[in-house]
Image (cartoon, rainbow, N blue to C red; front, side):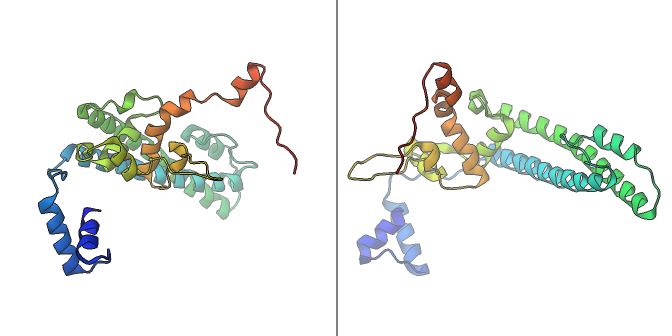
Amino acid sequence: MLASRVRVLGSGRSQKNDPNDARSVAIAALRSDRLGRVRPDDRARVLRLLAKRHRDMARLRNKHCTRLHALLGELAAGGIGSELTVSKANAVLDTVEVDSEVTRHRVLIGTELVDDIARLDNMLKASKKRVEQGVSASGTTLTSIVGIGPINAATVIGYSGDIDRFAAKAQFASCNGTAPSEASSSGRVRHGRTCAAAARSTTLSTSQRSVSCATTARAAPSTTAKLAEGNRPKKRSGR
């Protein structure tokens, strides 16, 4: 942003090329007194690595569970209707009567998938402990927010980095996509809620939106609570 302002003041246009961009960045860095000093943040990088590793293993487990669900549906009527676990899958595989080569190979592949899921379960448990230790060592207070556990806290810290580089809360909100957006109409100026203003759909912004919206979500009364108090929902007028 500062470099763009330098280009506008220098030439009246914000378009850039490599030499012009390098010159504008150098001038902005020389003249601005708001720039933060660059320093390594090993703690945040470690949490980012741990969070990404945990997320990748969880996604791989979900893929194995999806494949096993489909396979068990071919071996037993209805397969497993509830949440798939290793014990439930083994129980279904034990009841299958092997009467053909196709069935035998389905059972074999199903057993291998169950073993993969069991192995990933153990790895996820160990990964979660590493993440918890890393978050605890960071001294963050994010986990004190209802709904924010060690995995979300590690994601926010790991992908946000050192937030001290932001001069104000509004700059951080603008960076992570949680800043309010203007939603004006009919000459009435108003701003949308912070939760609805976030436009980015990455893992980072999702976790950061959950932190920004935690207090708002707790404060908003639910429809059930309104009905319990005797309040009727408003009917929409017909057009």
